[in-house]
Image (tube, rainbow, N blue to C red):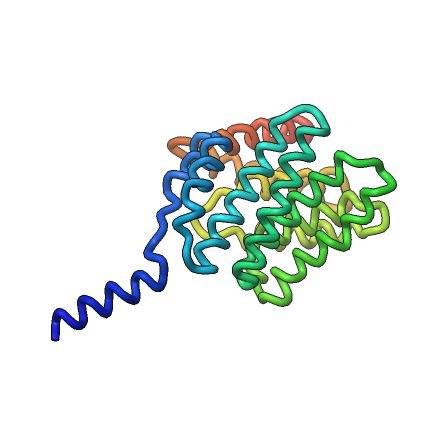
Length: 244
């Protein structure tokens, strides 16, 4: 009987594709900011992703890596290449697993950055696409705890000439409130402080100073900040100086 159970377990594991570890690819992305290495590791993993869920996990990470590679190049042509590839990877992630919110998140991010390389007249056309991605996460999938989606929606409303800055602030507050326990998300905290400082209604700037003070304490408690966190901390310091 035990032999039958062992064989059955092995068969089920084969059907599921077996576990995939993203530790190395995630460490290259988050700890080392080596986006090319992360991309390379993920491309090596792609043939091993046998289930739709596994494929989605690889594809959205590829989309994320391409987004950051696009941020690091200078010419519009290079940026479009990376952001365009990021869009395609995100579409593959969504097709593989429409319930995985990360595909929509990085589709939105790459669409937003890609359109910034194009003429101003074309940029507004991307807004409905991005809003649809974010509403799919927040409403259709019911992920109202998705801090990244609230922040992205806040940024769209803040920068769009026909959207409400007040609504942008409320979305940013939701982004801060939904930061997962134990995570810093310095960029999210600084973003709210930044737009409160710029809006400057009532006690906005006092609230911004409190946010920055709290964010600084959280940052200084880190034993080893990531490259992205160190970059965001520079923004925090610059905003603190403005708030004095």
